[in-house]
Amino acid sequence: MGLTNAQFYTSGHFFWDERADILEDQVLAPIQNSVEMGLMIEAAVQRISSYSYYEQLFIDSFGDAVVTRERIALALAQFVRSIISTQSKYDLGEANGFANFTQEELLGQQLFNGSARCIIPILERFGPKPFF
Image (cartoon, rainbow, N blue to C red; front, side, top):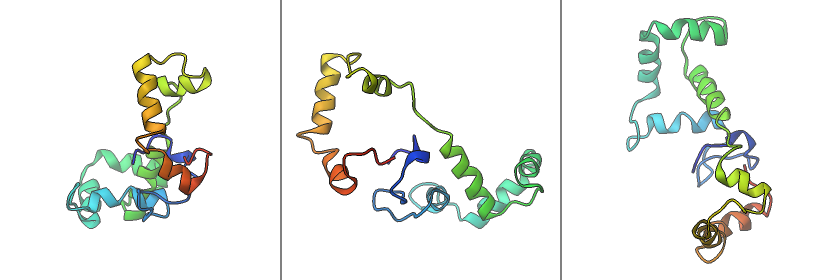
């Protein structure tokens, strides 16, 4: 599941199986997952603490240089919230009935929204409103 526009995600859960209740929980999971980064959070805290250039960043963000699991989660979640999409071809197409799409792109959009059933489970679960 992509993280673009995560700040607008209103269902209250993250990951496809919704196991993370808040973005601060979601951002730490890949770090600790053995298939992804495989780094225990305690090791991540030690590693980040060992880089001198993070000291001022933590002071600026949190008032002191102490690195904690919670502060890493807050910083990463805030970063993810800053990843927004407003000018992609799709974003612009929504505003003009997808007049900017090629015939092939329109077919792909129809497939995604129709017979391939990519969007159907999302609509069944969250309704016709955007879920992010």
